[in-house]
Length: 211
Image 1 (cartoon, rainbow, N blue to C red):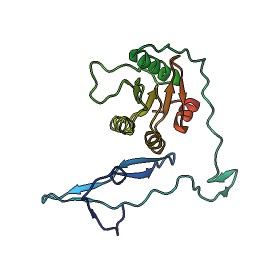
Image 2 (image 1 turned 90 degrees about the vertical axis):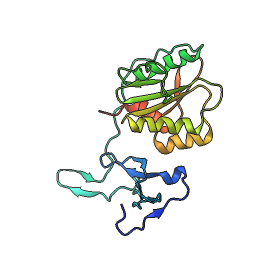
Image 3 (image 1 turned 135 degrees about the vertical axis):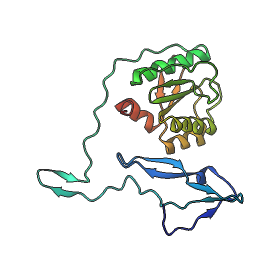
Image 4 (image 1 turned 90 degrees about the horizontal axis):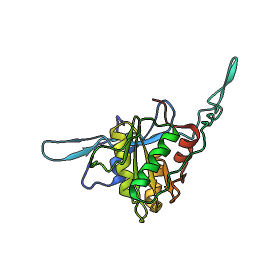
């Protein structure tokens, strides 16, 4: 929060103004969080100014430390997770697509993945400890709104969001997923998901976040 900043009256909302970038204090990864706001009894809504997040790619200068590597230097990359070959589920129906996604999430290392009982109003197709996933089995590219809704569901449940689509993603949807670090996978009728962005590649390589 900027102590010397002036609060700003909100007259028109946009997605960009509603969220603020912040870096994780543990890993340095940048994410987006709700912009702090407060409302007055008169009906005026005011946005609280905050300091912009520092660029996580800018590392501190390396300094020597007795008996060890320089501080601020990059460490060794995470060791890839060893898994057996994934056994796909042939997709003939929308239900098959959800089943294939569930099997893939389990293969990635998410345990207890299941379909929500009844109709889930949030649009989430699969849930498990630490994960929520949505599967788009339609023939239209997945839209921006679907990406944002899944991310908000994950944020609300402190869970990782993972999206699967048969027809790919609209350009703005993919750009938003990249900005939100949301893994995107595309599936063909053989039922084998393929990663299409860096967060998905990372999820395959190192597995689910530690809880």
